[in-house]
Length: 337
Ligand code: NDP
Image (cartoon, rainbow, N blue to C red):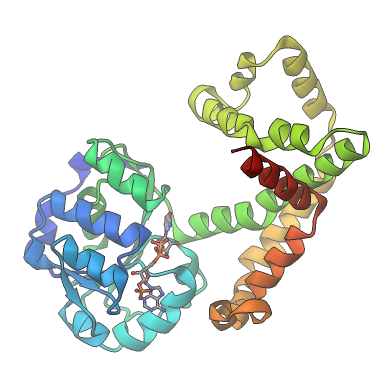
């Protein structure tokens, strides 16, 4: 099901205090869109620690509350728009004990709700309004009068009014203009984590191995970097795929290329890859193995140097031939400029 503006009634939000926990990528964009949709500024409150994000919110004319307990007590609706890994800590400690029994809680990603990492009362509404866009595009498309793709769902209908609230909020942030797709935290989390842990790691590995094979065959760093990604050809291919069709975009390529790509893809046996993908989806993503491991290291992500596991992964990845070669190419380019 796809919901459009006419399915949503903004009157549902009349006199409700809407709190944005976080004024980052999504928070800043969604709060501004909501206000520009006619929700009075007095009804909007930004909950943020006293720093540059808070200053940005004030500069944009919003009321800002640094005390999260006070913000929680005032909220009829709370958009949780701080990074996913900090949500359980921040929300469960300051919002859960202080929110109204009938409050509506909005997430922009399914992760913490699907893995039951956030605590709600059964009387509250829990909805997902998840733009499939970075925050700057959520704002710029709205300003241009355009919509953006978005997933919407009601995960807990404590008040019996969850869908009406979810749709009104979706409309207010501009998500029903192009149609908000009925989804669920299960679907959103499965697809997101699968893409992040199965599809894209394989794509990174394919590029890494392709680079090494062609380098061994005598191709130069410069030629390889440009051929494979620096020319932006892959970005253009995906743009065409979105516009014309995943396979239909091939018609823009040379006949040699079309024949090579189609015959090559059909000749590849995907059985082993399918099993590998299923294994990641079921035994790493959906069973909570990854989220359990991630929760354990989450606090370390704020550490410096090698104590931060993300820094260690970056370091290891930078040792690969592809990244080393790219560094050389980029430094030579810088010398040319
Ligand atoms: P950001 O990284 O932009 O969030 C920054 C905001 O979070 C700032 O207000 C920051 O304020 C606050 N914040 C960060 N750490 C803490 C903390 N420890 N305590 C309190 N506040 C904190 O987040 P995004 O907008 O990228 O993501 C928000 C949600 O939107 C997530 O659920 C994400 O999955 C989802 N989403 C994001 C998309 C994107 O393009 N980025 C796309 C679709 C969904 P300060 O540090 O000053 O406290």
